[in-house]
Figure 1 (cartoon, rainbow, N blue to C red):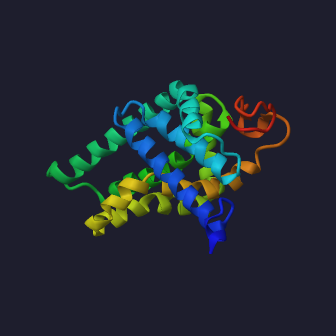
Figure 2 (figure 1 turned 90 degrees about the vertical axis):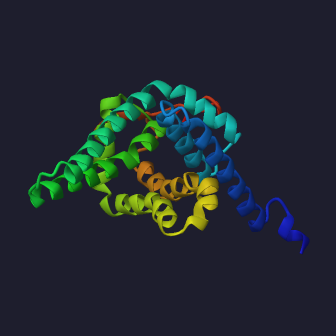
Figure 3 (figure 1 turned 135 degrees about the vertical axis):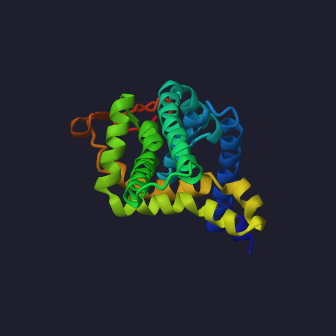
Length: 229
C-alpha cells in the first residue's frame, strides 16, 4: 500500500501531473486577463507542455515566464493578427444574423469553411512559436503547412480544444472543472499530437531549410543544438 504513495509510483506521477496542469491553468487565466498578453501566455503554456510531454520539464513557473518574456513581442503580434480575424468574423456573423439581408447559402458556407481552415492553422501557431525561431510571417506559413500536411491530427486537435466549450454548453456543473483544467488539459492532449509532428523537423542541425525555421536554444539546460527554449 505504501508503494502507491512513493514519489516514483504511477499514482504519484499522475497526481503530480494533475497538479502541474492545475497550476498551468491558473497561470493561463491570470496572464490572459489583460487580453494583450494572451498570445504570450499561450506560447508559454505550450513551451511548458512540450517539456512535460518529452520528460524535460524543470521549474514550471520559471519556465512559463521565461518563455512568456522571451516570446512576448512575436506572440503579441500574432495574437493581434488573430484578434483582428476574430473581430472580422464576429462582424460577419452579426451582419448575417441582423442585417435583414438574405445572403446566398454558398457565401455563408464559404465563410464557415474559411473559418474552419483558419482555426486549424491557429492550433499550430503558438506551439510553433514556442519551439522554433522564426519570423511572424513564416510562423503563420509553417502553421498552415503543418495543419494541412497532418490533416487528421489537426482535426483531432481542434476537437480536443473544442471539448471544454461543448461540455460547458451542455452542463453548468462542469464549470468548476473547466476553470481548473479547461485550458491546460486540452492543450496537453494536443501537445501529445504535435510533439510527434515537430520531431520530424528537429534534426541535429539547427537550420531547418524546407520550412524556413530553426530550433530554439535552451539556455536553461545549457544545451545548444536540437533543444527547445
